Length: 380
Ligand SMILES: [Ca+2]
Ligand SMILES: [Ca+2]
Image (cartoon, rainbow, N blue to C red; front, side):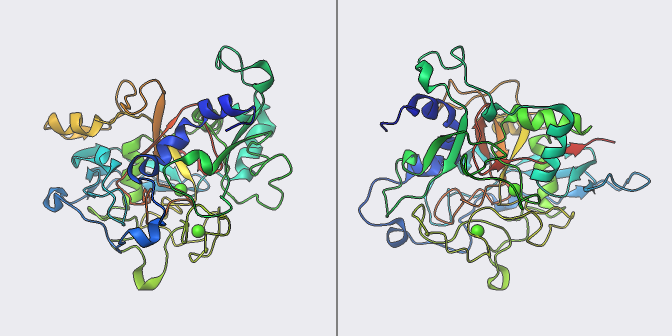
């Protein structure tokens, strides 16, 4: 990359590396497109099928109505994680391993936002508090000591389709750091959120999400709370809606169809090319919309590659796990990361199939992009 924002770009987009990890690590350069090189399936290869034990929901329910825009998640004991052996439905072996082994977890009940936090909701917060998101703050020399002064400019990272087919081994080809890009200008300085009040807010870092949650009297979910809720009380299913990607031939979430990442490559077979307003697909069994796809969602937990392993090895049911004490991503050891969940409108069946409900994502805490948002929970 030759443009002057390269250093900031490189430093701020670590989360993109994480999100597209399957691409960067597991798709080797080929002249052929992955579509012709791979055999894809409706369901992934799985292992440890017997290790999912039934979900046992709590019976208690708080009196009174749920807070506006939230639904009650009863909590209980469930089997958490993924037994998917492949990174994708196209048999790329890979990083879903960090969601193994399946282990037993208990969470108390809580309320959860029924949708991703929208632009309209985030705007109320900003108007009330004057909050300035990370993308709107000028990067400092302290944070980016190697960057030249002229490169320290506000902005965020946008998915930028390529003019033609590319090898999928270099994510820099389809992500760009664009100056003056933030939640109000999700596709660059000329764009706006006018008429997009009911779209999920994006370009949100962890601290931006946590600040909103605090203002709203809520908090970010733990990773366990997020997964318990997303599974909707079901046991060991691959998706939030069941075990097949397209029941009756119909997509159940806003993901990506077609040839990634080329211009006009997303066919929008699921109804949307790119991001969608919230509530466009049926909710899961708890009444939650878009837990899979549309935008990735922050959780409060540090990301550690071996956290599930350590919980499993304890031999006990993990009670209200709060995540590991620190972050640990051996592939990217200097980056401070927390867990993302659910995948986004850019996840395809070829890789990054993180709309599979037990799988995990991760991101550097001060990084954002136009496919990353959040939702909140509230304890009783
Ligand atoms: Ca779509
Ligand atoms: Ca989502």
